[in-house]
Length: 485
Image (cartoon, rainbow, N blue to C red; front, side, top):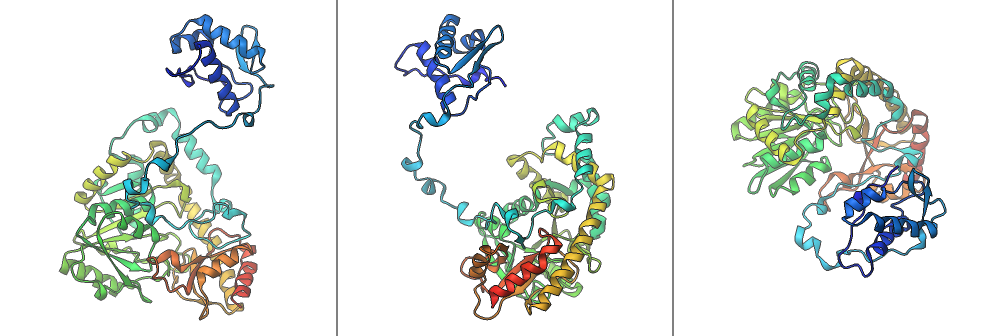
C-alpha cells in the first residue's frame, strides 16, 4: 500500500528546517500508527512537488530516516516504512483539542441526545439466550442469492444506477416491484408518485413527524409505543398526547380533540402485538374524517403472519387520502439494510421527497437495485417462507416453555410476529429483572423502553424469538422463570 503525498502538510510555525519537518512528519506518522511497516512512501519527486520544496530536501530527509531505521530503501522501487521501525506506543500522544473549552450542550440544546434510543448490548450475540427484538438470524438469510443480486447490480448494464445521482428520485425498478408485488399484499393500490423510499422505518417516521407534527401541532401516539417514534416527535416541537392501548389496540374514542396527526401500529401493535379489529379501524378513519386529522400507519412485521392471514392495512380502507403508510424491509431481510418506504397522496410525498433530498438525496443506488433484483427474482418470497417456518417452530417451543414454567403472556400476537409481550408477577421490577438476567446470559426487553421516562409500569417485558436458536429457547425461559422465583 502506498502512502499518498497528500498525507504530508508543512506547518508554518515549525521550529526547524524543512528537512527536519519532513522527518518529523514521517516519524510521528509511524509512531502513531498511521504509517505502517511495509507501506511505500511517496517518491521524492512527488512529495517535493506536493510540498513545494526542492527534491534534494526530501531525499536528504528520507536518507536520514533510513539511517535511523524508520525507513528502508529498496533499490529503484523507492522508500518503505521499515519493519524494524519503533512501535506506535513508543511516542506519547501530543496535545489534542478537548471539548472542555466549549459547552456543546448549551450550543446544541441537548435536544437530540436527550431522547436517544435505548441501546442493546453491542455484544448481544455473545449472550447464549438473546430474547431481543429486531436483530437478524444469519442462519435464516439467503446469503448466496443476496450476493448474486449484489453482483448483478454491479454489472455494466446497471452502471448508471450504481454511479448516477438520482437527485430526489428513486430506482424505478424497485418502485415498480413495491407497487405491483408488495403493496397489493396489504390491499394498497398506489402510483409511482405516491411512493418514497427511506432509510428504514425510523427514517420514514422521522420524515412523517417532521412534515406533519411541527410546533403548535398536536401529535397523538399509542401508549406504550415504539421508542424511536417518541424520539422523532420530541425533536419536532409538537405537543404529544399518549393514548393507552387496550386488547384491541388504540381506542379511537380516546383520541383528544384537536389532533393534527395520529401515529398507530394497527395490524401489529408495538410492543403488545395486538391487532385492531375492522370495526375499530373504520371508527378511526371516521373520526379522522370528522375531525380532519391524518393517520400515520407503521405497518411493521406484516410479513410475519404465520398463525393466520394478516388483515389488510388501514391504508387499504383509506378513501380520502388521510393515511400515510410506512413500510420496511428491515425485519423481512435484515435490519442493517436500512431501507423502507412511505406511501401517501402525491401532495404529501412531494413535500417528503424535498425534505429527504435536503438530508441525503436518496438511498444508495446500488442498494436499491440489489434489493430490486432480490425481490423480483423470487428470493424475497422464499426468504419470507423460510423465516415464517422457523418463527412458527420457535414460537411453539417458547409457548410450551412459558406454560411449563407458569409465566404470564400479556399481549396479542394471534397472527404471528417475532415476539411475545409478557407480564411479570406483582412486585417484580422488570428493569431490574433485565439487569439481573444479563449475568446469567439472558437478554430480555423491559417495558421502560416503550413508555415516556418515569411512566412505565415496570411490570411488562418483551421476549423475542427472532434472534435466538430454537434449541436454546427452553433453557433461556427456565432461567427467566428461576429469576422470577
